[in-house]
Length: 177
Image (cartoon, rainbow, N blue to C red):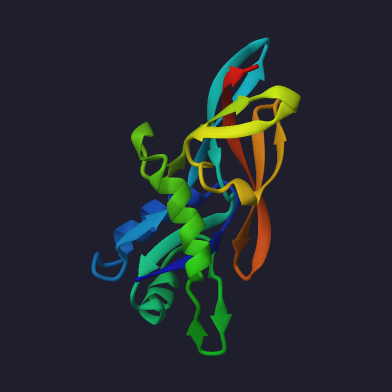
């Protein structure tokens, strides 16, 4: 079963998912989701938890029949474009692309949503050495491009649709020496 990517209108991910779930037979579409991320942002001097879209404008669908999925998507009244077309075939995410997405989502399963990337706990040691203690970023250290301790954000470069994209994930400091 492959992961296929749909490009949808901005801010319409949830509405598009709901509509797709209504019109598509269960045997055609086993999962339809847009991953979100948990972040901490400072508002008026207080840290507040905020949920945001991980990849705005994209919805993921798992199916074994991409051609039938494409035909059914024509019934969706919202803007949807199935990405990854190679002549007459649609190409699912590569194994590498699936791996980082699954890794982020599986390590976040305790937060109540299967499709939400939670916070990663980090420790800052001597010389500002950052160590990932736990969370979705554990094991992805080589993909981290930058950590902004002030804003509590990790910039992670991931492969996506035969290119690379930078996603921002939330972090929290649990130790500081």
